[in-house]
Length: 67
Image (cartoon, rainbow, N blue to C red; front, side, top):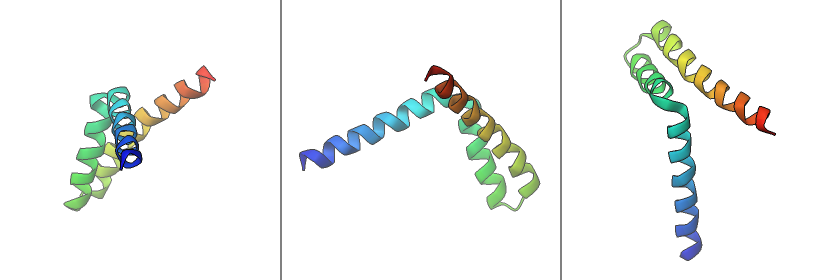
């Protein structure tokens, strides 16, 4: 049971760090993109997902430059 709780805490910490690093633009891009896609606005959803992907690409680039 302790292993499971430690694993869950680790996952929550990873998600929290990702949300903080991604910022409002990335999170809103994902949420708006999912909402637009669900309502059939696939072109506009593509733009929103583009914002989301750009923010994640910036995070990946920063991580690679650190190494």
